[in-house]
Image (tube, helix red, strand yellow):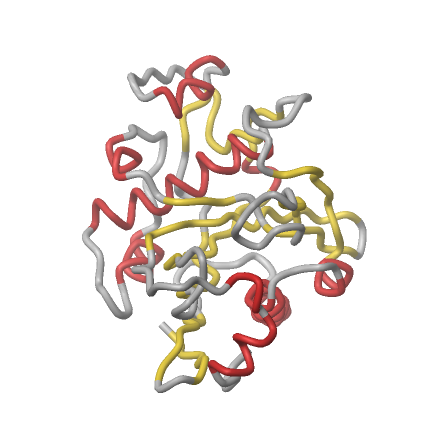
Length: 244
C-alpha cells in the first residue's frame, strides 16, 4: 500500500466511504500465531456482511479500545521496549493509554474468538467485559505481546481507526473456549498459513501487514521485543509507510 494515492484507495474501498469526515479512534487487533510443521499459521475470522466496516472480509480479532481497559490488573506488564513503541509516532499516547490499547487486543480476542491470553490464576474484576477471565481463572498477561504495525484509516471512511496490530503465540493462550467468544462479530474462525491468508479476501492494509510480518519473522522467528514497526497513514493524499 505504500505510495498508493487517496483517489486510488477510494476506488478500491468505495463502499466504505462516508459523507462526512470522522476522527480516528484508538483500536487494537491481535495476530495470533501458531507453528504447524513447516507452516506458520495465523488466526483470522470473516466479518458479517451486515457490518458497515469491512463487511465480508477476513480480519484478525480486534476492535475499539475502551478507556477502562487501562485499569485492568495483569499477571505481567508489557515489555518496556514494546510499551515505548506503542507510545511512539504521531499523537504520542500516555503510558496508561498504551496499556489500554494492548489490553483491548486481548479482550477482543476473547470476545470474538474465545481465546484467553494470560496465566491461570486468581483474577477478579468489576468490569463486565472482563468477567470471562474471572470466570475461567485467567489473569491477563501483556508480556508476550509484540507490536507489529500501526495504521490509521484514511479520511472519508464510514469508520476510522488508529489501529495497532499486535501479535502473540497460541502457546500464550491459557484457555480456549470450545464455543468461541461471547460475541457474533465473526462468522467463522480459521487458522491459515500466512501465504494462504495473504490470498484470502482481506483488506488491503491486512495484506500489507501480513507481508511486513512475514519479512520480520524471516529474520527474527521468535519476534524479540523492540523490533521495527511499520506505520501506515495518509500524508499529502498518498498512503505512506514509515518506521517507528
